[in-house]
Each structure stands twice: as C-alpha cells, then as structure tokens.
Length: 195
Length: 140
Image (tube, rainbow over all chains, first blue to last red; front, side, top):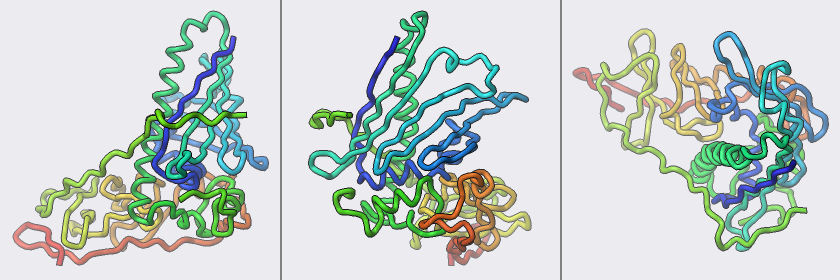
C-alpha cells in the first residue's frame, strides 16, 4: 500500500543558495551531527552516490544506507533505504521509502520553494501508522532545513544575498560540483539563477 | 512531473535570530581550555580561547572558510573547531590545521574541472591583540 505526502514551504534564499547548501556535503556531519553523526560515502557513479549514516549506541553502530541522486539543476532523489547492519531489526525492512526534493523559484522570483514528495510503500499492517510516520519525517525535514536556513541567512549577511561565489573556489569540495558550477556558476545561463 | 503549487499560502521557513548577547568584558578566570568565549568589542564579535600555557588568544568570530559564527565553535586540545564544517584552527596562531572531511569524504574527493583536491587551503583566523589587566581580558 502506498502513502504519498508532500512537505512544501518557501526558503528566503535563491535557488542557487539552496542547492549549494544541499550539495555542500562537508557540513552534514558537523552542522547536522544530531541527525548524522557519521556519514560515509560508499561509491559514486555519475550523479548517484551511495551513503551510510550511522549512530553509535554503546558498542553497536547502527543506521541506514541509501542512494542519493542529483538531477541538475535543482532536484534530489533518495531511494534504496536499507538498515545498517542489514541484520538489524528496522522499520526499513518493512517500508520502502523514496523521496524527491525539488527547489524552484517562487512566482515573484524572490525566494525558493522547497518541495519534498515522499512515497512510502507500507505493508497493510503498518497502514494505520502512516500519519505518524509522515509527522515524524516532516518534523525531521523541517529541523534539518532550519539549520541550513540559519547557515544560508548568515552567509547572506556576510557575502550578500544570492552570492554563492565562495562555493566556486577550487579548493572547496561539494557533491557534483561540476554540474553545480555549470548551472549556477558565473557563466551559467541567467534562467537558472534568481535575483 | 511535479506540478508547481499556488504560492500564496505557502509557509516560509524563517532563520532563527543570531544570538548577540556576548559580554563586552571577560575575566581571565571566566576562560577555559575546553570552550571558546564570545566577547563583544568595538572591532566586532570575537572569540577568546585559553591556551594550555594559561595565555588567552582573541580571534574574529568569523570562520574564514564559509563565514560561520565561531561563538558556537568547539575547543578541542587548544584548537577551535568550526561547527559548520568541522574545520580545525590553531588556537595559538589561528591557522587552519586540519579539515577532517578530507579523510571522511576520501571516496568522493576526486579531481574535476571545478575541484582540485591537491590545493591546500590556507584559511587563517584574524587574530586581535589582547592584554590582561587586573584579571580582566581586554582587546588592545
């Protein structure tokens, strides 16, 4: 049985700033340490990256792995969510989760819409819990985004609104940087950027 | 294909106000080796660290990497660790001493058109001269 829900709100930044913050992978383990104290990339194949995020509880390290995919300029997919270690009892054995996050400019081109679509494939026995799962995932998404929004707001105060040139320095690492620079860099087409 | 939603009723996720309640003076005894202390001055917000030799050091509270506020940085072994990306700066000199992500992201950090992993960034915290007088820490 499939349960689909959306989490949609506006972010007070440009699409380039929102995408930059998402691809700025070096902050995941530090700024978002409550949610992903350990982040490990398993492999990368083009715009797909398999990652493991784990927590430690005493001697046991547990968490989940998933495949993330970037579809430039501003779409992100997450799927193949599995428990780590695989033998661990987990909700991920029962539920198949797929998310699609899109950023696009608001109609007045001043802000960015963050549009998350979540598809849950649930066994019938878990169907009554779908709203509770939806509420928890929504809260998690908002909490993490709040940290990114605070980071973006400070960057705007320092570098100026819409200025993402700090990401373009050659020593700065981020996921799928060539694609990001191609779409949001100095020589990108203006349609991909907003005021 | 995702449809665009009507935007008149969308909520906006607003940033939290940045904390600006740093004291404008500190006693040497307020400092500790395990935490940075914020200090509000005419030069702007600073962070003060206490080295293991008992001497304090002052730096601008702005990370030279991406601009985070170092008031929320951790202090580990005399180094200042930025809470955004984990970059570690020497509490003695303010120089970048380690980027822990180089090891964590080793699989992903491959050379590309826009990224060169062989370039070693030389980020440096801006140091401010301090003096200690009658137990009070003051910026010169």
